[in-house]
Image (cartoon, rainbow, N blue to C red):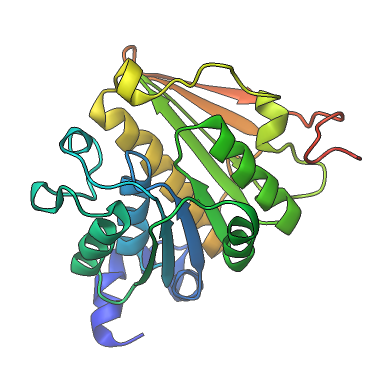
Length: 247
C-alpha cells in the first residue's frame, strides 16, 4: 500500500485485531453482492470504503424513483440506468482503488455457480425466496460463506452461513419457504432499517475476509426497529435438508 492508501484506511488499520495484515486481506478479497437495492447499497458502499479489492455486483433491474428512499447507492440523475452501472459510478467516486465488476443480469444456473465459486464471500441482498435458495445452494456446492439479510416494514434479520462442517445453511432455516413473497413494494419499509441490516452484513463480510472476530454463524439476529430491539436465535442444521443434508 502507498501512503495515500495507508492514510485512507488508517482508522481501520489502528484496530489491534485488524492492522496492516487485515487490510491486505481485504485488498486481496473478492466479494459477490447479489442485489444492488436496499441491502446491497450499504453493503457495497462500506465494502468499497473499507478497501475490498474486487466487488462483483449482480442485479438485472434499473434505478426507479421509488428506489431512492432507501437504495443509497443511486441518485436522481441516474434514474433509468441499470442499477449495477449506477453502483459502479457511486463506488468509483468513493474509492477509485476498488475494482467493481457490474453484472446487469439475474444470476442463475452455471453463471451463478461460476460467480459464487470465484468469490471469497457472497452477500445476498435479494428479495425473493427463489433467489435466496439458489444462492444458498450455490454457496453450499462451492463451499463459500454466505452473508444473508432481509428487511420488511420495521423488521430485519441477518445471519452468516459459514459453509463449515456441521453448520446449518439458509435452507435449514426456511425449509421450502413461503407461498407469498413479502416485498417492500407491497408492504413498505422504513429506509434506515435496510441501512442497519446492510451495515451488519458488511461488518460480517469484512470479518470473514480479514479473519477476525466471532461470526454471526449458527445464529439469526432479528431486529424490531419499531421497538428498537434485537434478538438472537440459535440455528441448527436440519438433518433432512435437501441442500446440505447427507443426501
